[in-house]
Length: 422
Image (tube, rainbow, N blue to C red; front, top):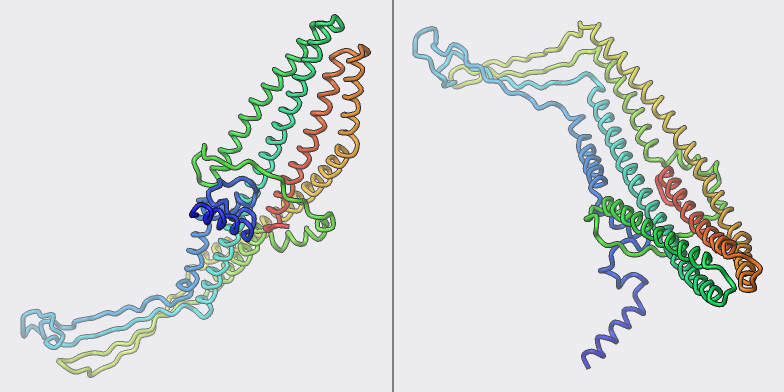
């Protein structure tokens, strides 16, 4: 009764929960999204950049705050003209001054410092977004490469099984005196080469697993789920180069950070020029005689900006830093737009290759193989031609899977340049 109730609840959950909900213990890797979800929570590089951005945001408020006031106590004539022993009691000295001093920067300096800190916080946020875009692109590319390796392994094993069947055909024909022993040996050599390819594929998959686990902050040998079908490519209309270029200009994290750096340099230049003007200090001093306050003093102090050569150097430095920030932004724009055009071209080439293989190359290769097999069975073709036809099938199928994988790697790079998913 209890087991039937548990089975019924399990079936009910399976019916109403979305796919993947019941896979709580499944390791990541089945989809690129599962890798991204895990990395968003565990990647230490991204966590470090987020914390740095949070720290930069907390620097905004104190950057524009007034300096703390200072309080000073002066005990005057502690011996009362030599009439008593020295004392530190305010009521028994000649007089006691209590001075409260507040430093006041020149008008606008505090606002400039607050704006600079805010822009630096924006730049830190942009760098955190850029770090995540880099991590996400690497995970998406690694997932696509694992999909390629899995497809390569599947195709190789299928062709290996086919070659084993061809070997049996060659052995039967050799036993009947219709073929040479060389045909059997060629089939065995071909199988050995494919088994070696499987070893290399296993090694590449192990390296990819280690790379992905590093990005997920997991042990290098931690298990990963086998990759499933790749996510669909966006429609060609959504890959318009002009629209994506404008989108990249507005959303790319590196460009966002560089724009913030330019504005920061502008504000620093304004702050450097404002150093031509003095800062003030105001003080108020009540003076105590015996046990009563009998006098009040007011103090105004300001620095005299005489070191003009030093200030001019600081101003020239701020101008040069602004020019450097503008040039750096232009370099990033060129890099982003160039990478965008390159990857858009790569996606288009991968689409065309996949279509060509599926509609033309693969059917032709399969037709050529069946023709070569029939000819070999009737003694009208040699075994080498049959193996060559078989390899053309394998190559065509691998080309199709590689085009699919390459397109997703290109898409991941485009999304990195955009700073968001398409």
